Image (cartoon, rainbow, N blue to C red):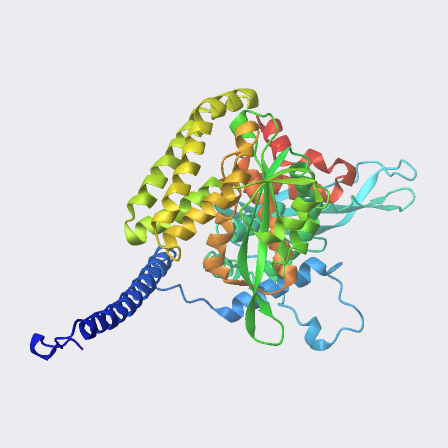
Amino acid sequence: MFRAPSDLPSDIVELQAIIALQNKKLSIFEAEIKERDYRIEKLRHELAGLRRHRFGSRSEALDQLELTLEEEEIAQAAAAPSDDAPANQTKDEKRKPRRKPLPEHLRRNDQVLSPGAACSACGGSLKTLGEDVTEELEYVPGRFVVNRIIRPRMACSCCEQICQAPLPSRPIEKGRPGPGLLAHVLVNKYADHSPLYRQSQIFEREGIDLDRSTLAGWVGKSAALLEPLADAIQRHVLSGQAIFADDTPVGMLSPGAGKTRTARLWAYVRDERPWASPSPPAAFYRFSRDRKGEQPTGHLKDYSGWMHADGYSGFNDLYRSGRIREVACMAHIRRKFVDVFKSQGSAIAEEAIKRIASLYAVEQQGRGLSPDERVQLRQARARPILDDLEIWLQDQLPKISGKSELAKAIRYGLTRMKKLRPYLDHGFLEADNNTAERSMRCVALGRKNYLFMGSEGGGKSAAIAYTLIETAKLNGVDPQAWLTDVLSRIADHKINRIDELLPWCYAACAA
């Protein structure tokens, strides 16, 4: 407490002691205030971040049980070798939705497959004994139709040999969905983010009784059928000089616990359009139960080249191997300063954002130029800006509190600056990892609807579907039209010619 002037001693030594004590107390108070200010700043920064990442006031309430069953059934269907139930299967395991007749109001398209007019055995004329009719539910954009495959059974008038045309191959053996319907369900779930139970409800309003578990079986079997095509896309991505890598968390149901655990979806993208390369863009996805470094190490075991990525330490083993060289992301550096500016209005953060904007202005000018031209432009215009930015950040750091969010942003930028510089010397590299981050938007949107994966198998099926759909979109190809074409052909297509079914080949044929 402060003393009144009348209570102060007259002795100078005592006065000096009192002043020293008060100064000590004042220093303690100032330190406490400084610590409180730091805590307030940190809390404000965290609150601003939470507000930015919050989508809507409340997430849509979904039927968790329906979603859980949906993902589990997709995984089971993908792993099942056929529709035939094993002899030792229990009554409960055999229980499936009863197949109902297709609605009579749907238009029928008849396709007659005749064995011909002459007997293949003796050459005699054939007479009709009857016919087999196979109904296939198909989806034409905007409506359902029923394709009737009619196969007359013919008998030879001479030798009584019975002839019948074989049933053509179909995407799902012994199933009724046409390739267009399968493509529609896949695109609805993984491109338009509509869970299967919602699709079932929509179909019901159109008079089509398709149980969610039936749709899940179709998705799982379609994913298994399309996996070689997804593998072909992966090989194409990993043949590039540089790739973009990112990952995002997804929930996965923990068996027996009734809770979810955090799994990951990884995206690896090849996109050489910014420097006018003729190679088509592509993205492949992988699902994993965790984020351990062994996951990307396994995904990229056959890759050598440059990789744009954030500062995730799990990539370090890849960098240490020497096969893969790191390129840092300017967008991540910028994002740190944007967060500080939005939460605190810092003038230093604002200036850093403006300087980084100048670097992006140079990149905009280099869009579409050849790699050599991009290098010349960057050396002349971008390098001086980046050099000045690095020196300026070093000068600002001693002027601010070392514990502040701004200081953290500056230290992060300075740490990543060395790994960013390779883009100045190589025209086929980019200044950021936004290409990979854009590829994760589909996952982020889907995550709001299905919330979690029911199993590891369901996650694998999702990764296959995302690989196909997002690669089609990157190439300006309608995913539904392309998948319809692929599903109508892939069952009989030779595996060593799988590249013929890639989306850019489809686009070339359609042109």
